[in-house]
Length: 123
Image (tube, rainbow, N blue to C red):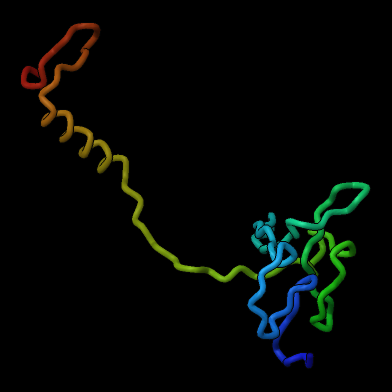
């Protein structure tokens, strides 16, 4: 088979028009402490230490051998692609208190006040 430009291969999985998914193609995605993404093989590990094999690219953009890549090295760090960003406004403590106050008034159940049971209407 000829290599197509712009396609990469992972361990022995190739992106050259193959629809076969093998256990070698399965990677665990983790977010590293510097917010980069690292990929470790779910199938292969170091025999002696049990350390996972990581996916890495060298300076030329070629795949590095899994047993040579460490998760702390920049060759294994990938920029995450955000899926979707949702911006939510955080409620203030005042708004949270108002919502709780409304739900208490409408519930109609008695509450404890200093050990005494009091109705909502009498407070």
